[in-house]
Length: 401
Length: 165
Image (cartoon, rainbow over all chains, first blue to last red; front, side, top):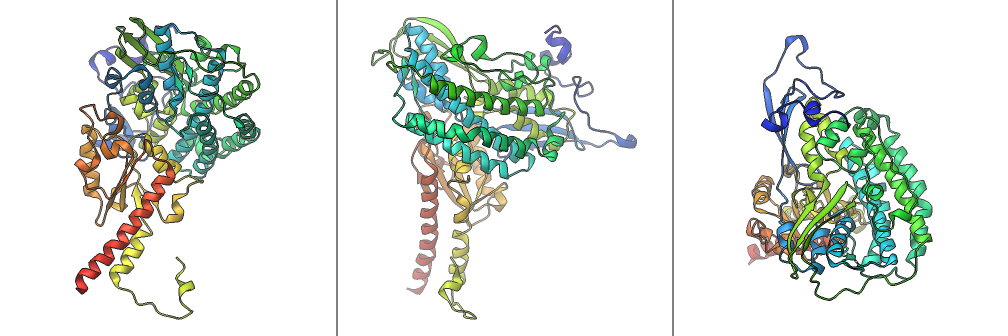
């Protein structure tokens, strides 16, 4: 990245918190405004927290000039439940419960990030099999999470069929995850030291059966939504998050990779079994909603590829290290992060040597994406708002924490 | 229910208007699409998905509170959200019902120690059915709707019995 944040976003924008709708970043599609010198009074529209397309309880205040958005303000905090503060009063083995409920569609990744941070403090060597099981659980969960995104993104564009197909496949995945961990969504499977349980009997076959049809289904999904001309014309070229904006706002995950930045925690700082797996990181070029769609669809293909490798190469051995019942890690400060379905999910853990953490910070990728919305929305039409929110795949649980 | 199975062709049914209305109401419980947190994925999305298929019970989502009969409070309600929940409830037309889904909506759940969290949605709006679980399975939500249907049927009977006394 050669240009600085000031150059990309305009000097003073971040300092004074003002939006200058007159000069949107290059690449944005501007709506025709002031036809024949006719201008309209600006109107402020409230969107949310109850809105079917904000994917939770995001609230936005949108200032419009006719159909065109002049400024947007994101209001968060409608799901603030103090996960970070509550973690200070929980024992290390009980914090996974809170992490599940942070990013609730991909609970495994939150648990994983916390478990990795706790293990760094405890200086525990995690068995090889636990690493593989963790990767397996994460990839299965990534598929389930992306399918929810795929279904709801289609709902935002006005489609209904793809939601039902996505839910069909997600149910099959949840069956597998339920057999693995005992719960459909709040797994609490990955804990400090390893995982709770080994692969149950017969699950390997079940996963193979799932994979044997999933590739075909995925192509079907892609054609159903991505092959639809109406969908294409609605998402192509809108919500451009270019390299500069993406990096200035600290976006990670598919939102960043759609802009062409090759950053994936699984490759950059390999953890669990990802070093031994063969997978590619899909990249976009323009960073528009279409690129984000393509990147996520390709990520699903890569995840399916990884699951097959993980099943084939599953090592033997114990699934968890020996961990004391009451964990009292060494005093210190660590940061550990994983690539969740939405980007880099990180845990900054400060320990004072007692059985509770002294401080835990939960870095969720959605907060950064929501902040970028304020920057990318001006210049678009009202109808594009739900598309752009849907394409960034924000999760309000980890946003408000 | 296929009424023509109970009656022959060209036949008549005598029914009290209240009973007829409640029959219609309990078989078309439309809920407001208002997911707050994790429970929304299970209770609103999975439950309306192909496997659990709420639709066959006449339960379908509406995006506006003014078209809805039921509110599924699916998730943790905090103090900032409470105002909105109350307002949405007030916007729903009578008769209306509330299903408190999951531990958070019942009591505050795993987050109840946090001062920002409302200790159960029944602190702000009346609740008809509580569903335990964190999150409850979609089957539980369907069971809650069956219970709600029973409750509506019972209400009519009680009202009629009180009048005939």
